[in-house]
Length: 261
Image (cartoon, rainbow, N blue to C red; front, side, top):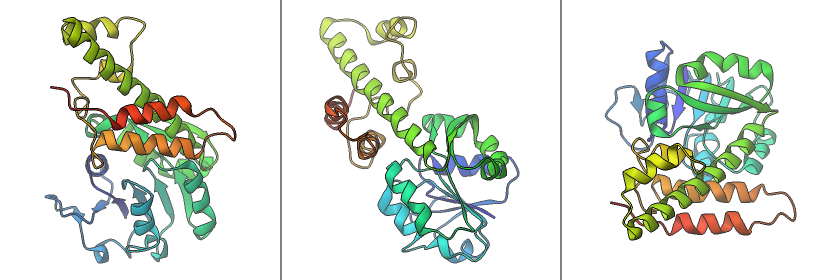
């Protein structure tokens, strides 16, 4: 059995994609969901799980899933854990020493926002051995369309937080540019069309109409809030002595975003 732990805005469509592809997959979440294949009852999935995919929000929830409240690491049939949450690379690396060696560990954070999860076209950044990654390739193919093996276990998460730091910069600057354009009397749609075909082109500006959080302001429990967390994860793994002024400024800008009409 495959279990997706954390069936929120990303985990739920990932589970749906696995089931559409014919995999025996169930979801676990502490919050009840209107889906017969997502349970809050750990006893339904604890013993039969062989592949655990974690898509929970942060380190605290990961600790609960793996070691504390749910303690999936002690499940008798568990063969592999796929870490798809975006977490500190340092924390992810340290998991290896805490989990029995017979359990394969793969870091497979993803990118693409909810729309890509719904359309099964996520991009996965992978860390782990070729053998371990080959074992989950059918699952990845059910959920995504781009797969980047970045290196040994932990390299996928390092690549992910760097990617997200860049995405956060795009988000902060695009929102600032649009606010300034409003003040100048430039219509949003006209400016976005220009940006899409010019040197300012970026993922966030080009996807404004598809990205579900593109107009949100900061809240601790929304996706804008996750960007703040993701920058913190990148900073936690910054090279010794690195100049962190720019990413810190981006983090502050994201944390101060107001909703955009």
